[in-house]
Length: 133
Image: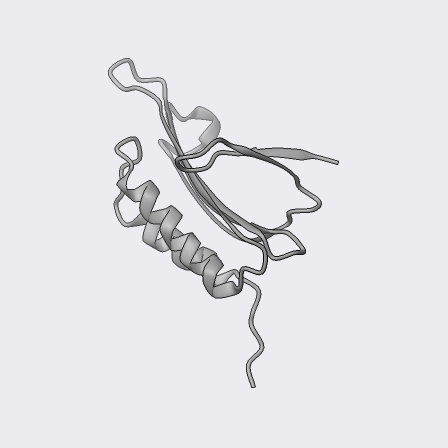
């Protein structure tokens, strides 16, 4: 069983068993300077994930990292996340995705050029479809 530690906003991290908390939706983006990533002096990554336990509890979390080898720049990292109680439905998870993306967009370590809005939309689009009559 593989464990994952997830950083949350305004509370201690949580540790979960990945098998019991599968990813139900995610979105990622990356940028690197140059033609090939392995040659890049700058790399930037953005991600948002939603995991849900069988009992309906959910964890939504995201992160940003900018790694640079330029002397006049510093590395930047940001992590935010929230937990949702048992019985959480798709609408609550979608709201949490927006909340976490907005929190990251507002983090001074995490410059935003509209990328978090795009990632929120992509992550929500990847949610399991609801059946309606």
